[in-house]
Image (cartoon, rainbow, N blue to C red; front, side, top):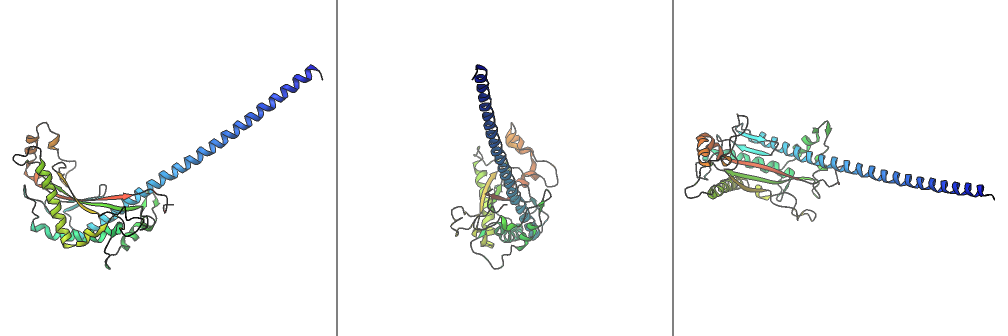
Length: 298
């Protein structure tokens, strides 16, 4: 064989090796591309699942608020679906300055609120002493008709499997508020925090005294081995003292917060008697819990 033939054979052999290498690299590239495409699809599916469960929790809480509004039927009570807040106006429930006594005029409405809460909250939680009169067909029916961004959420049963619920009421907080007037000899405002807690506690105890089912509502079943460790009582109390001034329902925007002013005492005095009366109030806040677990959300 001539020298020319030997060189040609070596070049052909090198060319074949390079071709094999390029094919191998292309195959690796295709495999990696396929992997990342699949990963991207899983990430999109997971994000969609999270969004759907979060929407279900928000919409279900909105249905509960609407049901409570219908049962209480008083325009002086305001509902905020965005935050899950029920707010009593000063025309319904307000406290004398420095006092935690519930006015007798507010008692009938607190009774109605207690019954409405006991009827609706267990439909997204668990009542440890079920009553025959407890009917949740209304929320199941209304939830199945919900459409969010042009898409139905499906049935409530998909999200409310008692063995592993995806959405639930995690807490219902009776929140006590005060005005900004400081107690004598209390520059840090500690006694206003206590006063807010006392107002909230008295309100809760009054409602629970009328309807003891409020203290029997759990976020999840305490008797199911799959959920007993995560179950906790739903109702509780909180105090915000004067840290959340109440806005006027008929006005846009919010009142100024004296705590943000350079001269707190002057800013507090400038609020006026009407705003201070509005601030001495009770709010009820419904907080939802949810999980984006894959089961039951397809």
